[in-house]
Image 1: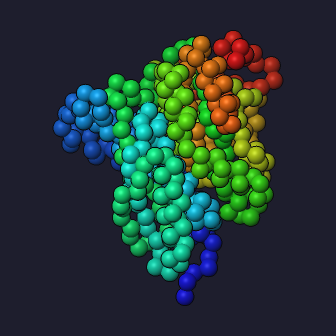
Image 2: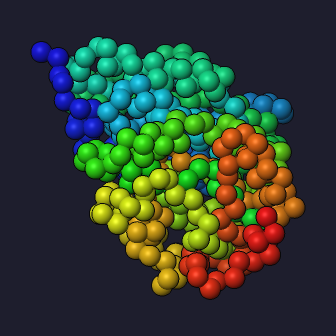
Image 3: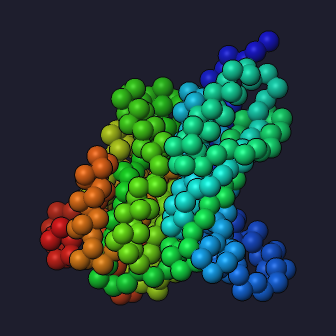
Length: 359
């Protein structure tokens, strides 16, 4: 008999909250150390971990490769397929590339209705088509816990690759999506989120980062990453470490999805947030005035989150205007300063620096 259980009831850990913790990943990757030969055409790989691998194919062309998949974060199968695809393709955009083709990576229970599986795959395929790419195949296994995502191939010019490194003191930090997807989705799984709040989170997660990547390109961003499972603070620290600088974030201007703070205050957090906090806390300094619920959102694993970019102050204002004109605004949330790690400055008395106040 076909199953009638909600999709989210089949997932032990859904969305990017299911991502292996940063500490675990680091230990696993130690086993690959020294195995791969030195390849000068491997422009981005394990030696300097970033959002995707990049391999030079010629003087004017490089391949961008990434893979991402996870359990159902929402009950609507089409939405799950679409947001999982958008999330997987985001890594290509974080490297400054364009999506060319993708392969499905999936696992489904035997008794999951074929119609449900079909809607998941259709959601992913239509999102890839929106990106200008095409689904060219894939691989599916039987799995009691459903999983879906993509292996994505993209292209970029070898001299125009974005990486997490390169942020410079004085740069303005711009974020292209509001935070809180993990918290809102967790509340929805427990029937505690309003339809409007869930719809806003799904709309954010299914929005491609393609336009944001184009804006970053035109603004000549110094550094770029997408904010996903390791949270704003975790991925922000990765940028800070790769750049040899400190990211100072201003709590009062960090955008939140509708309902995120309310659900955080009610205790709807994830194990992924706990792993993020445990691993990255030694590198993050948060002022006492930042409330507990805001801290929870800052540690929240994001699924298909926005791009975090470091822009020269004279380019940031134009970039923000382009976002506003597109109907999907971005936010200046901080600046790059000398030092290391992450600082989160509380609202209420903290003076924002001129590069932020002038925007």
